[in-house]
Image (tube, rainbow, N blue to C red; front, side, top):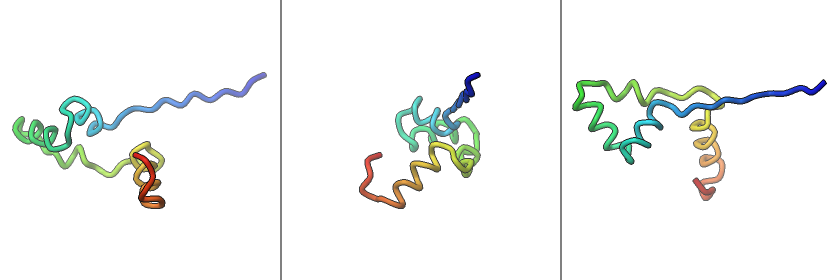
Length: 66
């Protein structure tokens, strides 16, 4: 019998907005002009998420590639 694990990842809402509008500033502009609250998109990511992992790697090695 084989043990298997399937890991499914999903982009955060902010990552999806940045992908759609190309920059964080453009995403913020769009949300705020649609009477939205941009701060809800910038919530602290869950531990172990891809965003947190990349940020921690940069703190440990600032010259690491992004």
